[in-house]
Image (cartoon, rainbow, N blue to C red; front, side, top):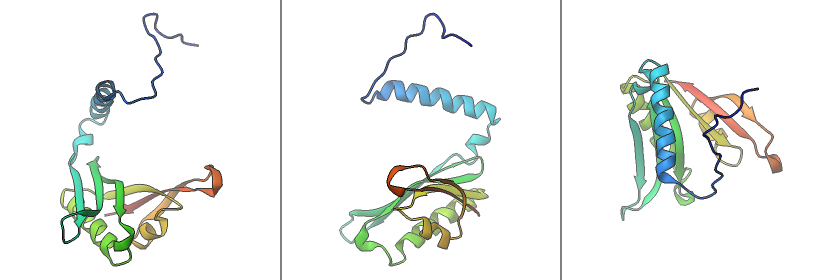
Length: 147
C-alpha cells in the first residue's frame, strides 16, 4: 500500500477556507480541462435565470453550468407562493433553449424525493440513477434529458 508523501500533513478543518478551496478547485478544473482535451469548455458558460416579482425581488431562479456540450442544472427554486403557475416550466424551458442554442445536446440534474422529481419527469427528464440509502426514506434521483 502506498504511504503518504513524507512532507505532507493532514489538516482537518470544519470552517470555510475560501482561498484553499479555490486553489484545489482550480487545480481540479485544470486537470479536467486537460483530460477532456478542452471539451470541458464547450460551451463553458453559466446560465443563470431569475424570476422576479413586480417589486424586483427574486422569487425564483435556475442556475446552470454548461460543459462537454451538456447543461447541468445545479440549483432551481421558486417561492411556494409562485409555484404551480407555469413559472418553473418557463425557467427550465428557457435554460434548455439557451443551452441548446450554445450547442448542448444533453441536460442533467439531481433532486430529492421531497423536492421535484415529478416536475422534472413531466418536463421530459428520465431517471437514470437512484440513491435510496438516506435516512427517513429520503431518495435522491439523478435525471437526464436529450435536448
